[in-house]
Image (cartoon, rainbow, N blue to C red; front, side):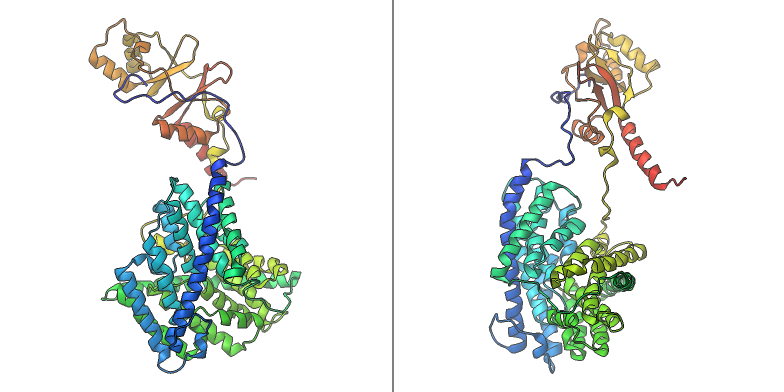
Length: 588
């Protein structure tokens, strides 16, 4: 630039850029070391949450102070079935009203919003209130699982730990997601699925700097799990899965039905939520109103109360008959949708597993292999469609049960359900809530077109340049009569770029009546501008334009620094236009 009131940036040397498949550096190792802490923190948080739920169950349903495992179904009789969920929901409503409204819901949309729009900052209040409110909600009979709350709690632990150090927002995001994945791993014993959930739902990138720390955190939590929660698959069962060509074809058919069911559930959830928003009372009271439906549902079928992990095991073992399967599917879906739509605190994975398992169990009564294996396949299908995470769902189902040979079947069901869901609904059950807050989230990832091109492919060759010896009067005349662009590079006697001058500079020179003997070179206060070489990636050029606040970047020869081209903003846009044409133009 010509002499202006703002200081000029330091020269960026024209050197051969470091080209690599990935952008990893030593910071990845730093984050991986920090993930040891988030993995441990997530595992401990899972242990605390499970014990809190047990304490609340014993207190509400058995009137005793104990952290020993207990089943709600063993005490769900009489008026207590309705009273306990209402009391628990009243407490959660008060906590949300006077503590933090971010504890409402199942937690994953809030984590996504913090990642994308809140610089991955979560507060200590959320880290404390989320597991406590979820334990009260689930323990008092709320039809939820512990996975959503632990994802939010583990994420809060990762975020708070990251905020203790001087890190970028992207690095905080990595540790937030690492903590969330650790919590999910510790609850379910599914490290691979937790890593895939991070990639498919929460990271919004596929980079070593985030993948490696998340992997470390999940594996650390998995190593802690036998000491804190227990070893082995969470829901083992004995029946063999019919992994044959026919079995895979039938799994695709079940996945199509599961995708339709999950789409119906998502639409119904937000219709119910809209209904609560139209009520003429404060949202603090909504969970208690929803809990009335939960209690009535528990009166009809006690197995719908609480997390329902015992029901998941019954589904996989094939212990339920047709009438029980239909009742469990319908009643669980209703009470879960009403409770979640009312804004109480709880997760979605366990309810989706029960609903999908009941669907698969019903189909399995007439399919080869029996009810149990098809319940597992149905779980994968409904989870995949609802969360738009087909890989996570397929791996999650086999990790939960230990039936890894069934992966082709779960992949078939997950893929078919995912295909149906993305065609039927614009958004998932996770992103719809974020969208209703005025945010748009795209869950499609692709290689940036700018990362595929080089400056030498986009540049205008042999651009017009002004010599530094050009008198100011001649330069003003050039911009008034001949100039076709807003700015032009200035070169020295060896044709190396030393600055950029624009129409605004020429107008200022004309108004100040600079002397005729003054040259452009005399007006340059700092002979240094950002330059690139022909083999510089186009996305690096775009980043340079942003950081240097300029619309044109000079391209120089790496051998002698001579000006050989120039890249403008329109050149970068043209590369994106080429990719767009490749997306929409069809030809033989």
